[in-house]
Length: 216
Image (tube, rainbow, N blue to C red; front, side, top):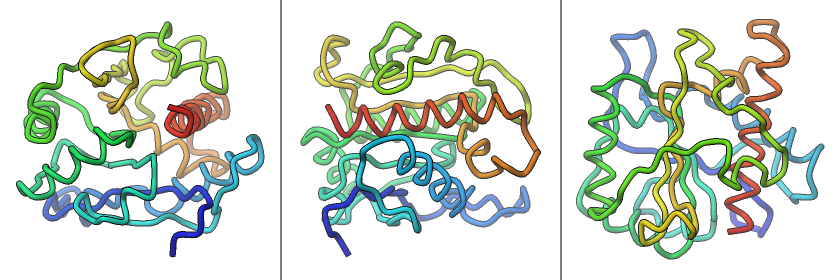
């Protein structure tokens, strides 16, 4: 139950099965270790009062979502939503919510993500982000966001944002980590699966997103 402490929120949506890839539903990829580990890092390195034992899982049309300023979604390349969910999610973002989309790549997945987001924010324009944006120095100074490559395929990442009123001088409402899987680093950190330095950079990115969402 809501108690005022920062809580990592993961968005759940119907459909999006990844059974052909050996997984279950798309929205729960990397659950729960990714958010548990990132929450531990936030607890140790920042002054955020945070729950470290897990996350809240909420649908896009759950009124409880409005209690939480930052929400993460996995695998939006497979995402589908109802008209009611689109309406509610739009209200969340316009009111001040900040959404981060993780773990998708390729033209087909981008096309699906963009189609769904256009139902949420029909007027939205996606702007490619670079190191100059203040989100990449909201806590850590990340010198090269392009160096945080996909941990499996090592393809070059792309970062896109949607700004309030489509004005890059205003608040970021949405960030999409495209052609990447940053939470994979969070989930498997400490297991020796990925390079130590790469995992550190991925954590810096996650911390910056949370701090930006809490302060904007």
